[in-house]
Length: 414
Image (cartoon, rainbow, N blue to C red; front, side):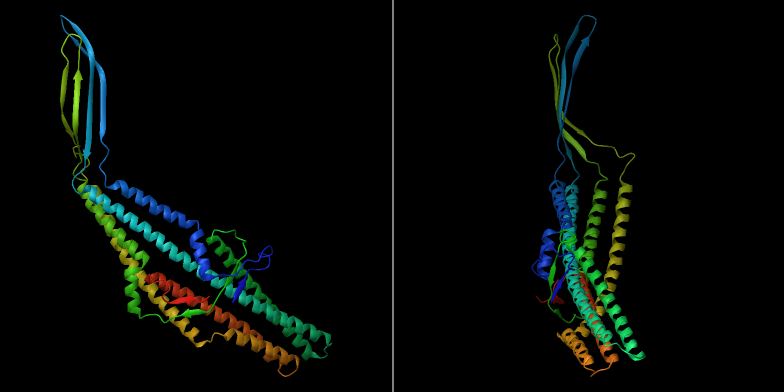
């Protein structure tokens, strides 16, 4: 099936039809927002490269005038001192900072992976919707044109009496309904096209033709199996578990940082005067803060509170995922069972029946009520089939995202 954007948007050029899988690939390659998540990963890796390193050594230099005075003499000279000090962290502190930085990388990579999956799923839904709504618009325009042609024929006959006039009014009303359906479908086509172009990083009015094949919907696994996969692979839960693990390291780091770091290093002091011998002092100095006012208890309490919040968030996320999996599975099973009943040529069959009713009504073989009802049922059938397919696709993609198993339930044949 082919779906084209409205003629207004495609007036300048007619692009080659693109399959849904190719649109997904082009979107993942050209979406500008992916660069943001990739930059997050790069920033986390850059932070990790320095998280396990000691602080830089500190060099301290002092220069002054050395003046000595007494009752007999006065002497001036140069005095200077130099000190090289290295801050030393408490044992285990650097390892904890490395672990926290590693979790930052893992969460950034999970965020990128989740966004790419969500983006691919959204493109599949939009492309399928664009094609399906265009099919509906074409069907509605076909029925509306059929009504308009029939009305012209009936008016030319110069009908007499109330029955022919009512039939003309019926045709006109049915034509208005068909045109309204075509207009609504056209709006949905444009909305899907605009969002699809935005995700692909293209101009909003860029023309696009989608080549859509039939859906291949496979039976969903048992609910317990889906829930097990979701608890293990769902992106949100994996992020929450990584955050909880990272928060545990932060608690340990806060406890470790209650013991102050110290600074140690050699120093040298030189004093010289014109009348006295030079004096040099060399040694090793050590310094550390005294935890009188800040002993680290507040930081430990804060980190433990954040850890409790992370635990509560994980538990709430697990319950929410259970609900989403159950709801999506019920929707998918319902729509998949409906798709299994319909044959692949259902739309063609209804279209042929509507055209057959039109020919035989013009020949007087079928009544007006049968003709109008078949046209309406044709449009309703197209709407129902495409709506069911779209809902099945959305539910399947949601399940695939929840369970972390892309392509396991539904695919679009090209």
